[in-house]
Image: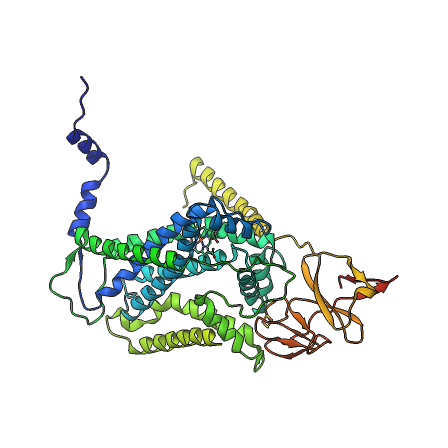
Length: 356
Length: 142
Ligand code: HEM
Ligand code: FES
């Protein structure tokens, strides 16, 4: 008689999957503890929200239709007729915002702990690229419901690069799929949102996490470790999971208590309503563009703002190479102060935009 | 003295060269593909009869892909501008109370000639030719 017992099955898989090697790696890995440890939850939380986005996003795709004639209607259908459709949509929208929030906190904490110093430069760079991808998710997703706010935020957002000399106009046409916002814009944003950005993000997240496993967690410069570091598996992982669970419950609660709304359907012939604003994470750029004079000395004000923000992004990417002191494991007060000033500016502009 | 490469090496080199040469048109056609073909609308559109044009009103109509604002001044003269604000492109609105053109996005104001008077816009609205023939009012692409 043919007989399979549990031990044989386990043995079969053991011989074919490198489980033992993996377990050995995970259990031997130690995570240092120090007084800044709490910040390390935010990278994991960002990953958690991304997983939520993938799941809820795929569900939304079952009903969403990316054409100007049907987009708004299909969102109404999701919210009013599909069972729990409102909850799935509300969760997707809330998690998008929370994810951008945790990503900002993660990046800022890594910045101030100078964790980008060797050998983790590639982790920092891949992290900045992820920030770009996630902002791309936010921008492309925002148009999809095709309501007034979405329409005008995209109108303004795609017009912003136009002021950049030489290539500006082409960038705008590329983003819109034509001179004006229309069905070509919607299908473009949709394919970016559900195919291009997810694939790119998975790839870069993979690299980011691999490096994280490979190099382990850093300890900030001149911070004393506590004596008892903690074992990565299962202790540290369980701690992370506990925080994920809290985040999950919090996410579900806000998504249920404050269901995401929907404005009026976009109409290209209707004059813009008052109070058009992009999502909060684009407000610093938006507000700066709003207050900049049309001409600064010989230059176009808008173009100048664009170039400054672009330059800021490039500086962020190459930061590990600029900060020479961090390479020698020294604190770099200068870079921290500059970072702090930029941070205060961004937060200040966001508050200003809300009050305006 | 250099050794003559064997046949395998030569064939490999030809293959790499071939791949490199074909990749150029492939990449360039993908780039061209994502830039949409320019399909600018050329033509005109009847927007109503002369009697329908009430003095001191404005409405937005579509000409090809773009919105155009048609205004009848207080003196009853019809004029038309591209309705996208020259700041960042929101659709503008005619304000009867003040007889000017206003963009709600960042508050640009244009006078009835389409010139910017306040707010962040610095360029005038694009004028759209308007004509009256046999009582019919129509707008055309410039
Ligand atoms: C694989 C991943 C994803 C898929 C398949 C997906 C799919 C979708 C779909 C079909 C919609 C349209 C339905 C709707 O508007 O409610 C949507 C909307 C949206 N998505 Fe995603 N998404 C994904 C990831 C993300 C991520 C990572 C973010 C954010 C950082 C994001 C942000 C948004 C936003 C802000 C909206 C508009 C929500 C609204 O107002 O309804 N998405 N997404
Ligand atoms: S788009 Fe009209 S004022 Fe900015």
